[in-house]
Length: 97
Image (cartoon, rainbow, N blue to C red; front, top):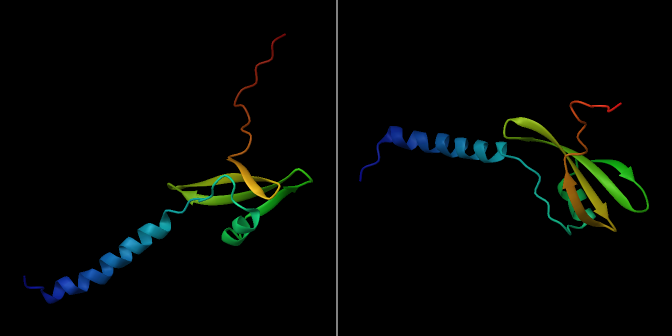
């Protein structure tokens, strides 16, 4: 097999494209039971939005699948217990009179 010079120039370009694709696919990688200090170290941009004696709640915004998503991460006694997108408000409220 003979490698032509113009093929060698394509290899760095292809490698760069693969790296860009991998870094553009960001999401939040956490697990139930994750220690809070590990989360804080991994996601320094997370914002602490609630802190009381029962729990700590963090908000993190991530760009995934072409859209910005907001995730809420809940810690109880220093361990991750829940991840969600917050409480969704209803589109329509019907009052029965």
